[in-house]
Image 1 (tube, one colour):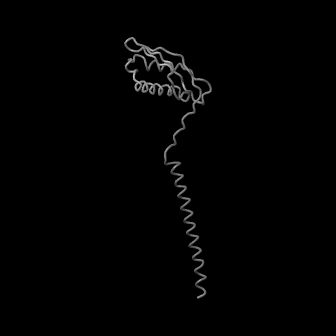
Image 2 (image 1 turned 60 degrees about the vertical axis):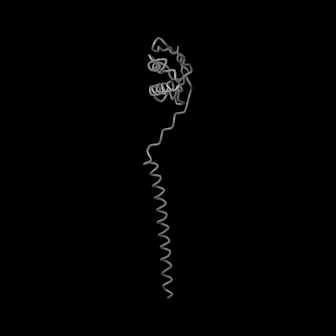
Image 3 (image 1 turned 90 degrees about the vertical axis):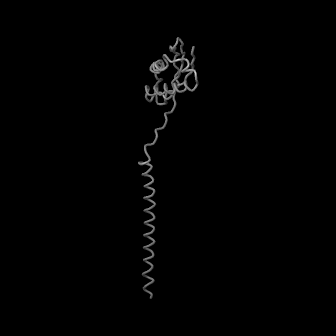
Length: 144
């Protein structure tokens, strides 16, 4: 009878070791699986928005609207922090002239429509300047 308890003790130790090894493997694989999911399967991370840099005021322009009316527009460009020198506003002014020319006063009179036009203009200007400009501001918007 004394031989049986001696044999049972190593069996208990090996079962405990086996359970510890399995538990450790599950934890490692589970953690690794979660890391792999977030790294590879959760999709590309969103790029950080650019940091704002200098605000570059542009000269006022006068744009011909329809029916003999006109728009006096003055705006500023919000440059990104990565830009070494202030962006030239010529492209932005040209885009603004093309965007607002021959529009009616009624089209530009409501705040909602003006905001929509500004967003469209901003999209075109940001695209034209690539990583140099991130926003635009109207500092003067007068129709007559």
